[in-house]
Length: 79
Image (cartoon, rainbow, N blue to C red; front, side, top):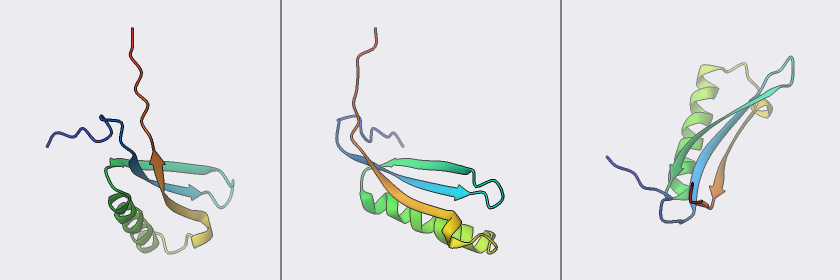
């Protein structure tokens, strides 16, 4: 399926999952998207929150941050 989400300049959303290493306190963030609606991005946030809690029950909730990002694409012509 072809996707042109954000190609027309409308607001797009993405899911962000940040995990903090308990020993070094370094963080790593992964993103999914873009999605056309906040609800679609939130569904992915919910999925990853539940999946990671199941997969790694030893990771405290304080070390896991999942949230949506709203983004307004800015297209620039390239030479």
